[in-house]
Length: 356
Image: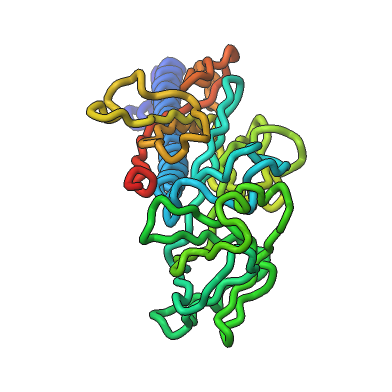
């Protein structure tokens, strides 16, 4: 006789088959949710890397374009005196005055560029009532004119200054290094006058002792900056092959420990230059070249720059076939890695050179 009641049968629980089916469905749901979570996490990481690269390449481009656009300001395209003629040292161009723009072209590595201009926020004008000889080692400024007194007080020792006669664009631009802070009481700003030195041969030719300097010189603190990529393990600077960094040098001695890192993970930097021809502008591709003779630096019309930015991390799946692309006259890398990359190309018109 079966004494099991209907209520007791209902309390017996699930069968083994029902448990297996339930566990299988739960496992499938959990696996699907985990796969979705992983996919979303990878997508978020990819978006973060893309945004990081975008911000880096934009910041690097903005820094470069803002400074390159100023190249040649308050000059005639060159500076005579310091850093010119037959002097020696990193970046010195023998037998040529200091150009407002210097190309450093490489077909096996990143390019670099040096630009020179006067800081417009520091401009002061010399006193036209004071006769200055080319053999003098100081300038006198009218401290009662405009904001000359305050601006003169910002000049310290060992700073480069650019002085040009803005009423005569064909006149020489003088590049000196101050040897002491400015004297706001007398209005004098002293600079190093290397008489007889080969580094001043171009200055002596442009302004021999006994001749007068122009009656009005507009002077400003010289910005002489070199932009380059630090991507080696030489122990100078923060860059390495695994961590390339866009650097800025401000004393014409690079690479050096005091150079400033601008943007991380800028892997390549390539420049092209256009010397404008009448009627053609720079629309003809044949007018663009990877370098130029610095003797015609005052004829450069536009600069085209290419930046390659690399992600800070590799593809987390290790599946993305990354490769540094070919740019300018530098071929593409033969090595494949798993980094993401972006390329940004920008053209900059050299307004302060082409108006001469």
